[in-house]
Length: 370
Image 1: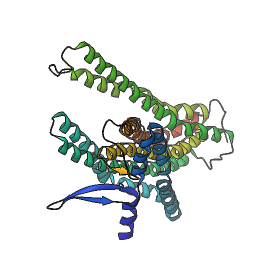
Image 2: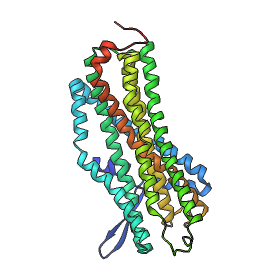
Image 3: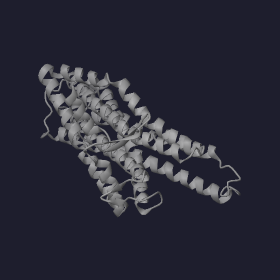
Image 4: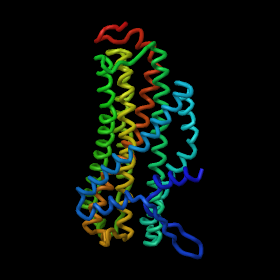
């Protein structure tokens, strides 16, 4: 058990964090691995290098989770075929309470920081909430990793049920129908992520324009003698969260029906398989990249140094580069990454439900396959 905890702590905990010890002040805990510090150090040369290092970190972070999922799939299938994979998926889902707890920890800490700043509770309180939020970004990334790992196993189990229900004997990647499905399936997570990220960008643009309008039209707002119209900003955010999800929802719901009916069960099988492959990679990478950019910004704001050089206080060029990375990372770690979990599971469930219909009436364009 101890070696397992050591490995998990080494891979998952942040490079450095503080623990308040009664009577002894703050105890600084450091890890040997320093991905966040590398990203923070990249901010010294501007936003571009920060973006490059953050993306590289996210891509690299995919390796170990994917190998773990692959090992779990191979072992469970070797022991009990598709039933073993279903049991492995059930085991991952049994950690739901833990995942919910560590997922909620980050937003609660972040909101506490916002409340402390709005109520002018002082910089000391804000520093503590920032430390908690940094740990919350890491726990949230772990929770999202559990979620996408369970989604991969669940989708594989549902894929086995789909294959069994449609009577598919094998999926040949060299056959044209299956290959078309593979290409389309690999594209879907990218299309879905583009839609969700653009939705965040449109909502942010509307919010910025409203704030600028209030500053320019409401007399006394800049001087602090008049309160802004908070309700209008809340309305923009709420409306966008509902309206902008219509198109991604339609994509998820309509894709299995269109592919299964027009191209048949074999093409849909290829689409489901490759959506799983590319979706898992994108979800893990997006979550970890966004979390690293957020923690790098907080690392700089805490006044840390790298390679003997001060990274700079708030308002410095280094800090501005970190803020840009954090702004780019928010829709990745909070929108696109987690939502891919829903994309994979919902497509698999819908395909399984409509499998008999696709088997009987599908492949309108390609013709029936014996």
